[in-house]
Structures are given as C-alpha cells and as structure tokens.
Image 1 (cartoon, rainbow, N blue to C red):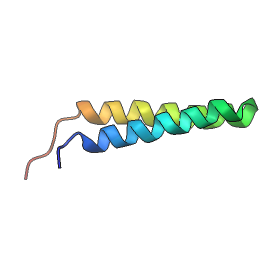
Image 2: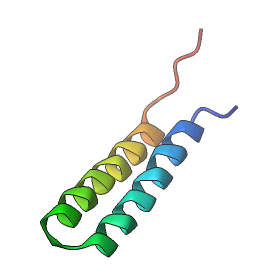
Image 3: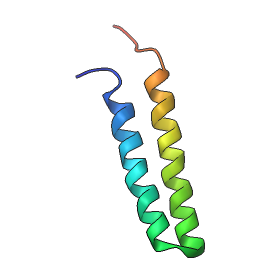
Length: 54
C-alpha cells in the first residue's frame, strides 16, 4: 500500500461528513461540517508528511 493512501482516505471521509453536515443544516450541521473540514485538513497534511522507512 502506498504511503499517502491513509491521507486520501481521511480526506475522503471528511468530504463525505462535510457534505452530510451541509445537508443537516442548523447549528448541528455546522458542527458536523466543521468536523468534516478538520478531517480534510488533517488528511491533506498527512499526504505531505514524509514517510517513515524502517
């Protein structure tokens, strides 16, 4: 498995969660959207992190 696969998965799940949050709407939807956007940011940062070789 490639090293940046985890980053793509986390960012993809974040995109799905952010989409669900926008459909929910209201204060709860804003919280869900923020949670999804945080996952997108963390997934992208994980893609740029250097891989550890053992």
